[in-house]
Image 1 (cartoon, one colour):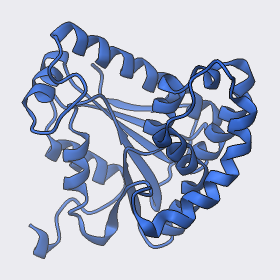
Image 2 (cartoon, helix red, strand yellow):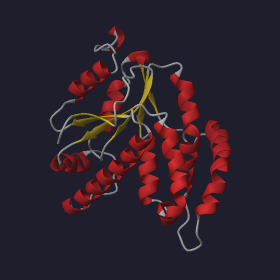
Image 3 (spheres, helix red, strand yellow):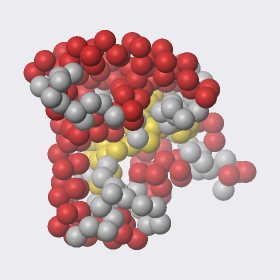
Image 4 (cartoon, helix red, strand yellow):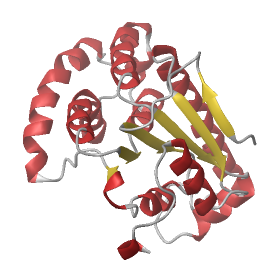
Length: 245
C-alpha cells in the first residue's frame, strides 16, 4: 500500500484555511486520528454534520429537506424501495451543509471532518435506493459532486492491512455490522467500501482539479507520524499548546 499525495492535474497549494475529510474502511483509525488532531487548540476544528436528533437543527433539516424533496420525488419509482429517514436526512445534509461549513471556515484555520461528504455520498450512492443509480439521477449527483468539490480541499485516506482491520473491528467495544461475521464476509465488506470510496473520490476529483488526496497506511504509520505529516502539509505548528500536552 502506497503512502503519499495524489493530485488531479496541477492543483493548487492551498494552505489554510481549508476543509479536510478523513475517510477509510472500518478499523483504519479515523476517529482516533480526528480526536488527536482536535487537541491542537483553536487552529484545528473538528466538525460533524448536523444532527437530526437535535431540536436546534430542526430549521436546517426542514429547509433543506424541502429543497431536496422535489428532486427525490422526480427520481423515485413505484417499484423501488423508498429512502429511509436516515438517507433523506443525509441528502438534506449534503444539500445544506456546505453553507454551514463556509460560515465556520471564516473562524478556523483548518476544519477536520469525520464522516463528511465523501462518506455520505458513498453511502447513499452505493447503498441507497436503486433509482438513485440510474441514468436519470446522473444530473442530480453531478450537482452534489460539483458543489462539494468546491468546498472540500483535502481528503486524508487511511487504510491498513486486512488482518489488522479485522482485528480492530472485532476487538473494539462498539458494535459494527460485520463484527461477528466470518473473516470472508468482513473482507468482502472492506473491499466493497474501498471500491465505493474510489468511485466517489474520482467523481469529486473530476470536478476539482486541485483536490488533494493524502493516503496513509495505519499498519505502518502511527497517529503521531501521520499528524506530524499533516501539520507540515497544512503549515501548522507540530507541537501541542502548553495546556494541552
